[in-house]
Image (cartoon, rainbow, N blue to C red; front, side, top):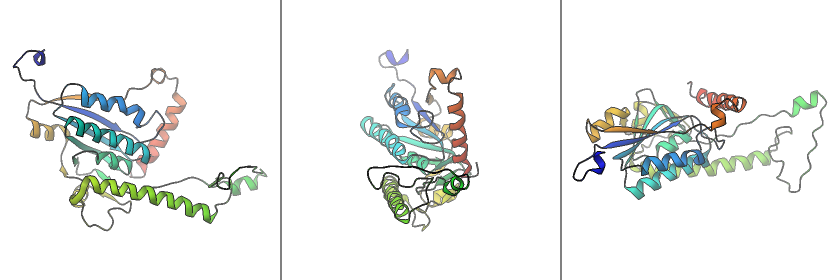
Length: 264
């Protein structure tokens, strides 16, 4: 009721957005459509002193990473609300893209940051289907429509084209990190190679601003009486009743594989 009583000052509060898991346009992981209402509410409900991003993310879709980060930056600038990122186990690849949406990045002594690179991975099964006598039949209109077909041998021209796409996305990722971190970045030659950095080494590389955890840092900035309001994704109704058990299991395996790349 305090905020409705004239001349009574409300206690400052920090809106916390949890960004947990891999980034994918799936409706089950972190993606722009699912997070849009969460982010909008965090910036718009009341007048937060700041928005804190609680990040534990091994990466994923570069497009979804870009869309989520762009939404956070737009709202931060429109409403003049500072953004702080707090990294838990990992903010790597697309996860670090999200962290760069913050004005300041804090990590734990053991947090993993970086992995500023782009990866594409699949399987080749053409030898297996040859051995069991299966004939692959593909008909296309357009010479590039069956590019990188996992059931056919790789073509050097296709690999070259794919690497060109990855390099374009990598360049965009690098430009974004540079635009957000600016002169804070070191001249470490491994910075944009996909290398990861642990704790203080990430700070030394300019990827983070300091060691710090959410509550103590926010209390230091906004006073001991600062309050916290959490905002996060809600599972669809059917998922809560087990109607998507198989899909969720597959998503869980994929997410564990993404975290496993960093030994987590």
